Amino acid sequence: MGQESEINKLRLSLLYLGISSLITFAVTIFTFSYLGSVAVEIENLVSSSVNPAATLGDIVSLLTIVGVVSTISSIIIAVFNYLGYSQGHGSLNNLKSSFPDRGFSPTGMTLVLIGGILGIIGGLGMFIVIGIFVYVITFILYLIGFILIGKSIMAIGNSGSNTLATIGGVLTAIPFIWFTGLFISYIALGRKLSPLATPQPTTQPYYYQPPTPMQQTPVYQLGNGTISENGEGYLALYSNGVYSIFTIDINGLTVISFQPNVIYPGRNFLTIKFDPSQAISPGNVYSGVIRLSNGIQIPISIRRA
Image (cartoon, rainbow, N blue to C red):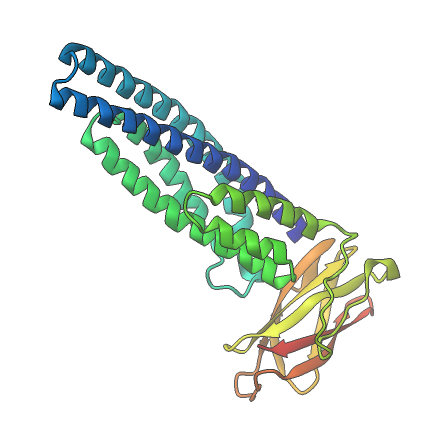
């Protein structure tokens, strides 16, 4: 399955999780507002300024409303979390090897799924201390899970010079406004998938500018390739078909291996391993060519970060 198809699945996952986190945000505000009313009623009960029986009745009514809303919303949230997990976990796992960011992982999807399940338990136990304790654990799982998901989105954005996706990834990692980042990322990755999208220009003269789709080039580089500190290179290609990569030659560098060796229609992300004994100075820009099995040669440029 092509990488573009996997990113489409990831987009659908982000949409589900965005709806889930938006509901979470709304229910959190609702719950705290009602708990504030409960606190006022308890204060009235302690001060004995009103009828104790009536005050107790109000407290029970408020807690019942909070409990019912929390339980129902927790079930809905868990369902959307599962839908997000079912689409996103597999796609992130399949895309993991294509991105340089070590934080790129499907683990975040798993943590959010577990958090949603625990949220149901928390809703059922709203009237007892254990319910609050479970909600704390749920929040921690959400916090870590959305940070990992945000880092994965940032890795995709950085690899293809998709600034909006990078911003979405950052916002996804911020507590309580997860939905903002998720919805932005959903939109950003949709733009990234558009075959009519033109690679973002840069004002730095030493960066290679790939041809645009209007030139009808079957395969071309997107954005700027980079070489990390560990000696691995990363670059993105756009392809209009399925091609096998025959060789990758970089002037002045020895290529040991690369993956994947087959590119599919849409955006593809390559990882290139260089000879570790080579001295690659930061800031150096290297040009090269990718040769496909059908004879097509793709000019590329890659820079040591």
